[in-house]
Image (tube, rainbow, N blue to C red; front, side, top):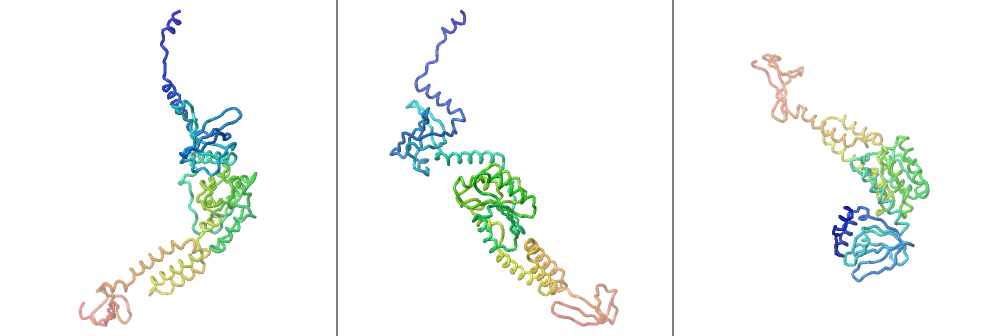
Length: 385
């Protein structure tokens, strides 16, 4: 009885319509899933307002969902919306207080099919990014002068021919090692992983290009598979991703150590131009000749020998050799006796034997001496020690 009496005397909370609607809106806003939700359905009641905003309803056989696409986002839609079109939308649930109903505020919209792949792409990209697979700290530097370049692509595709054509022109010194793979269709991702692992196990490749020509999102999808992304991330050899054309990005592009917009561009990036190397070596030769003037022909012979073995040695050590030669020339000039004479000192030799006199104990009265200055010699006789 006491309990019933207590209930009877408790005053209920009475809301205004607006207060209750605001509570509903605040509650919905507190649920994270409602702030970023993907919904699939059929477009109906499509209306493009003069303000530029788009209003429509998503429906299936059991329910309807009012949607709003504001002008700024509506202008970015890349397809023609129409009644009956099946789409996938992304947005947040919002309660419109004056009308007392909820809407989906649309941020992204795609035609179903392509849209489903796009969702998978975004979800995997977000997952791998959080795991650190795209981190710049993990990116390996590309070798400046690779001896062997591995290529993972279709042996019959245009991408391989583009890569070979550029490398023959730019860098014919390198060996090309093809690890063939299927680049689209069912099972392609497995062949891509296998081809990468074969190259890594073989061990001779200094760098790897993985890629294919452009295509639809369905064609490029093997390069968006998680197993391919992880194989690229775990590979110990630096990898250049070259998938599609300039506007096409795949998960492989984000994971790879370097992204190229096309297979041809990857070949440009992977190796230097042999013509540029020749110009560099010619400039280095000229610098070395100038530095070694007057110091004999032995360094010229060394230079010629290095140039003749450019393929095996010079390409990897050209920058280091530049520093060594400059330092050697500077050191030799500083040690040269003639360099010392230029500062006002003299060399004294005892005649006729020509021995250097570096102490008064080495001469006696009457000895003939040769005193060498920077611009000539003086012959004299010792009168007193």
